[in-house]
Length: 258
Image (cartoon, rainbow, N blue to C red):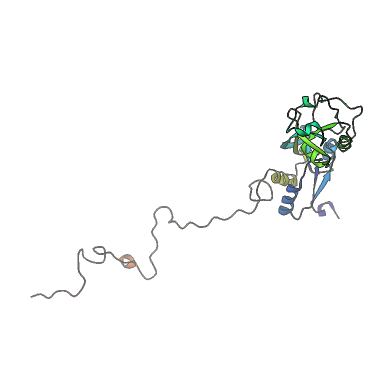
């Protein structure tokens, strides 16, 4: 099979915590002939996968290298602290970083938050992954501050989480190599931006609807043509006192002269 004979396809990368199901469903409805393949990647590996052509576009966590990648910011996540259910934090609606000063705050190597100073006390070692850190929280070793989607992804019945009001936040974006903005990438951008199928942008627009002919008379006050077989004043009914009879005249036989 030659390169030109290969059917089109679209590969979409996504980092942990992002749920692309909504956009994938819309893609399948609009472009049923173009299969979409999901590529799960670690947050730290997303840029390399896109740069090396392992995916056409991806949902990533900002920042990205804007000299290489285009990016459309989508949303900002709430940052939460994951704690055992019997922890004092569980009794509060939200906490600050200062409230964690006496806790060991785990800092996994795949942390996605841009900390200037990590709150709490440091652990002896950094867990390799967020999933490993969650296991340590369940074992009572410390607490973990992460974007809310990661707390949900690694949910356990014996753990809970609360918002941290002054922690760094994580922003999710759609990103792709700037020099590889293909037609299919443009189609996916349209879906993510919420464009309808009839949008004037993108390649999935529907054919324009022809306007219906106007029933109004053409400009210039042109008159309607008389019906066949009728011309001039006989083309319609005449009003009394109008064309077709003398003014004030009566119908009937003429009067005799005396």
